[in-house]
Length: 140
Image (cartoon, rainbow, N blue to C red; front, side, top):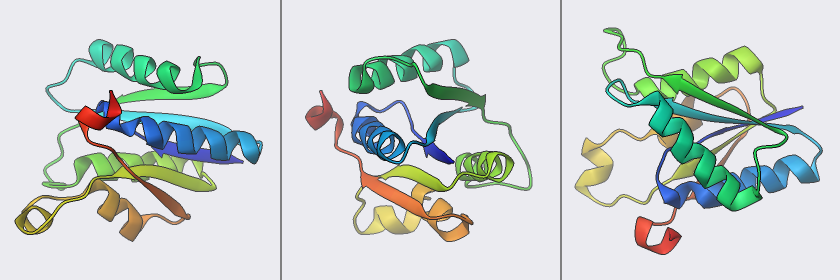
């Protein structure tokens, strides 16, 4: 049994990591942590930052399948590329649950900005657990 958790490099995702880890350990499940690196991002830097976030929450990377995946430009996916990468990994590994973070947006932000969590909730074939991400100032 597997839990797939997708996180970004925002320190506010610590609660997402903690929730996923707690679920995985309490249900004796494998934990796969996924980070999709933006097209113009540095994979090495992203890996180091994600490793720091994860180890600050659970102490080590032992027992965690950490996957850093570069985002690939696709003309058929003008928006929601990150969500589609997450859903593709979910299709490949067939998790029992997906755990993702969600940020509160209000008003125009909800309309104009795409939401990775919203796309995953709408398109995942397995149950999705959403965890509210804290703002950067609260996460430190």
